[in-house]
Image (cartoon, rainbow, N blue to C red; front, side):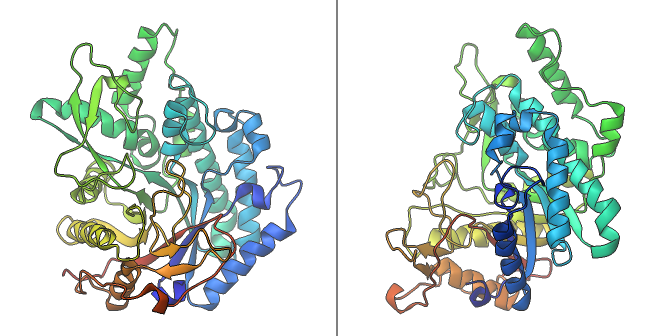
Length: 441
């Protein structure tokens, strides 16, 4: 499939428990290592660069039993796992992501219980998790920088899932900025800002909320001066995952608010809404607003300066079918907005990653929502894969290195398309193209 599409690189995740079944390097699975060596070598043999994520939400159960991402020791455990991966695969992998979407791992998880570990504790757990994912990332980055960069000359950063928030009215600008700092800033400011540490506005808001709730101190853990310096600057690029947007307005007195982040924003008394002009998708949380990705890129530049940005995820869900014109439109419109950011705003976006190669299991939607460029027949023992119209479109964009390709390419007869077979969908991942030199359509 990847060769057929002509992608330049392929992003996939290593499963921590697949390589270290106990969670620790006291036992390394030979089968797990063989699997990833085979994959990496096959990619390189076909001229495709591997872009490897160390953690995409599959924490070893033993570590979760010890508190998971709310246990401060997990930063050291993650560093030890990262060392194992660098030693095993670092000679061939030149681009690494430490943690995929800590915002989901922490905020989505502990506010809603909809993703692992399935524990709801909105007042304390998200903030502990936030700090320790940052510390884990920083330890892995500094390990690579000190011991592996001079040998392998690679790059390493984190990938953050970012909503775009925009004010419903001019009166809502201040609360909207709080929403952006709560989503983007808490996971980016400590790494990418010149001063480091928590965003000051969020630090104050959470402190005030904690005291109001009866706690003796802020539920947002302190970052010491040493920790601030340790986390700050631990990046080689900005990994941006983006899908959707929200409008923000101040809540009215007595208005009931649902949990952050896919409901509302109770911590700063705000409603999160969607525009009637944003098309719905098969996922209840997902509404289409392509300009949001450019506005996010502008916000990042304004707050953190000139960064190299890799769009590490961007994709569209529907209920299935191979003639997925809606997905083609989503990709086309988002890439167009990114090109505007490159050409007009002088933002250094160097790559674009489509989520995802083939239909997969989504945490919140199961097998209902389909994100893939390839249709998967889940009723077939072979899990037959068939290219959708969006695969043909994406292939054309990569080949032309331009958006000046037909906007709608239809699959005439699925039975006549090339098919691909495989037995496992455990690690459905992403395919990518170098984007910086794409032309306007």
